[in-house]
Image (cartoon, rainbow, N blue to C red; front, side):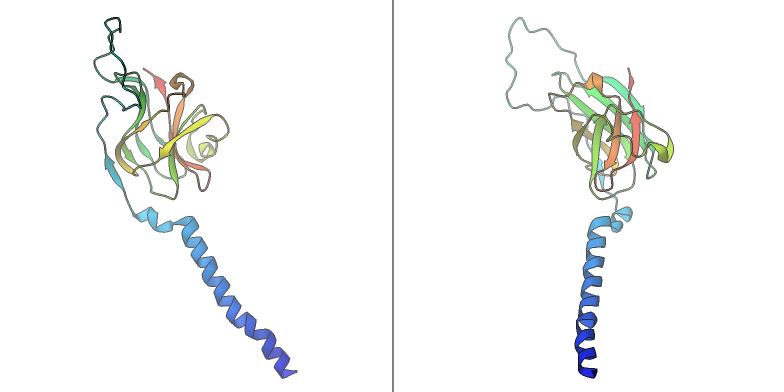
Length: 185
C-alpha cells in the first residue's frame, strides 16, 4: 500500500510546481504589470503633408489648398481606467489628408494600448471606460508612447465628420484608459 501512495504523490510533487510556474509565466505575459512603471515618451512634430502611395498631379485648374494644417475638432482627454490627460486634435493637412494629434499626452503605460477614433459619447469616470467598442470605431494603431505628442494618420476611407471621440484603448482588457470628446472648430 505504501508503494501505491508514493506512486500517486510523485506526479503531484512534480506537476504542482510545473503548473504554478506556467501560471505565473502566463500571468506576467498577460498583465505586463511592469509597464505601469515604464514610460515611453514620443515627441513628433505635426506633419505638413502625409505621404501617399501616388503623388498628386498638378494642373493649372487645381484649386489652391489651405497653406497649412487646419484643426477641424479638438478636445481634452479625461480619465477612465487610468489617470489620463492631454489634448486631442483632428487635423486636416494641406493635401486634404487627416491626422489625429495627441498633444502633451500623459497616461499610464499598459499592454496593447491603441488609439481609437469612435462615434461613442465620452462619459465621465469609470462608467465611460467600456463604451467605445459598442459603436463604430477605427483603430489608428498602437499607442506610440504614453507621454508626449504624436500623430496618427486616418485611413482614406474614414469620414472624419462621423467620428466624435478619441479613446486610448487597452485592447487586451477591453477598457479605455482615457478619452476626449471632439468639439468641432
